[in-house]
Length: 149
Ligand SMILES: [Zn+2]
Image (cartoon, rainbow, N blue to C red; front, side, top):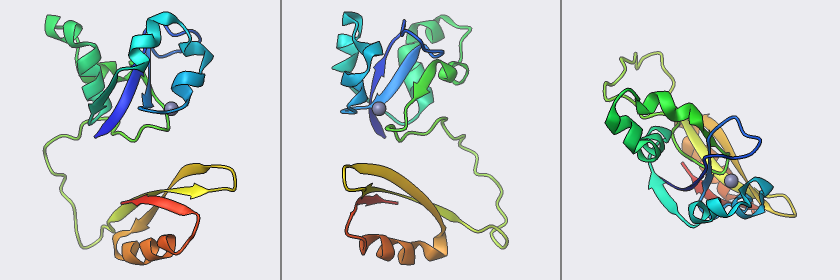
């Protein structure tokens, strides 16, 4: 679940109709492209979604209800900025067939690291069997915070 702000449409200099930022992202207030009054209500309107498809379903609810549009076909209208941690698609319900003998399960760890001026977000991928070791090493670094896995 990501708490986001969706700005648009009619954005200048953008191939996508809508820009999606994490709620509270400073770009929402800093970007020259978002200065127009018509975007003021967008900036103030943070909403929670599980995927880009869900955002498309919400924004294009009328068009989808009228028929002829599918949310999955509309996701390219949204530029998802790196501040947003959200799935770019909604996974299908079927579980893929996995050969557990040969597949190494990977886990993603995200964290913030301080570079003497600011915290920035980073991520790493480790084998599931190395997860505990990676976490304890990360936790030992003083300039790292907000570890999620
Ligand atoms: Zn942003």
